[in-house]
Length: 398
Image (cartoon, rainbow, N blue to C red):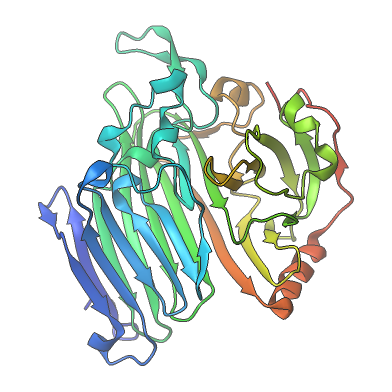
C-alpha cells in the first residue's frame, strides 16, 4: 500500500525500463480488497502478426471498459459502455507494434498504417499534415526537413507504466504511463499521462503533463484524435457544440459546409472533409462537444478546457465500412496544418526550459433520452451565435 493514513492506495509498477521491471501478465480485481463494486485491471502481451510484442492494459469499471496500449504511446484502442462499442472499424484491425511503422512511407503518411485507436494523441514535437520545416541540426545550422503526419508520440512505447487503485473514500482506477519523445540534438519531451475512472462510472478522464526536459526552449503541439464509428456514428448523427467559428479546411469541405454538423451513411469513395472550429465555454473556459444519434437515445461527449486546448477540429470520413466509416473529434493546442503554418499564425506552444504543459479531457457516454437531453442542455448553456465561413479562410488554412 502507498499513501497516507486517510487515503489507502494500492500501487503496482508493471514496467520501469530504468529499474529493470517488466511484468508480462498481471490482474487485479475488487475481490482482492473485499470491495463490493465489480472491477478489474488486467495487463497482458499480445502475440502473433503485427501485434506481436504489443502490451495492453484492459480496465473494466463494471460498466465502462477500455483497452490502453502502452506500446503505442498510451493510446486507447477501443472501449465499451454497457455493450455499446466506442471506437471504429479501421482497415488496420489490431494494434500494430511501432517497429512495423515507417512514418515516412507514402510521402509522410506512414502513421496511418497503425491508426485504429479510439483515442490517440498526436504530437508532441509536431502534429498535422506532412510538410517541410526548418530545424537546427547537430552542427548548429538551419536545415529543411520533412515532418510526417501527426508526429511520433503514438508510436513510442511507454518507459514506465503504473497501476494505482484508490481504495477510499471513493474508489478510483488509474493507469499512469510515462513516454519520452527525445533525440540527441533534438526534442527532449516527457509525457506523463493518468487515465482514470471509477467503478460504475460512464466516463474516463485523461490527464496529461508534457515537460520540456531541455535547458533551452522547445516547441510542443498536442492533439487528441477521438474517433467514433458505428453505432455512435450513423446516418443522421449530429455533432453538437457551442460553435463560435467554423471554417472548411479546403474546397472539398466547403462543398458541404451547410451540413458540416450532420453525418451521412457509409459512402464508397468518400473523400474526407475537415472543419476548423473555435468554441465557446463557461467562465472557467470549460466546454463540451457531443455526438448524438438521430433518435437522441445515444450520445458520447468530450469535455475539456479551452485554456488548455483552444482549437477544435472535426474530421468527417463517412466512407464505406470497409474503408473506415469514422469521424474524429479533435481538441488541440492548434489546428492540424503543417507546423510551419501554425507557427506563423502564433498557435505553436513554446515551452520554457523545464516548463510543463497540462491538458485534460473527459470522455462520457449517455444512454437513453433523459441522459442525452441532459448533455444537450449542458451544451446549450454555452451556445453563442456562430460565424460559419462558406470558404476556407487564410488564418486557418494553408
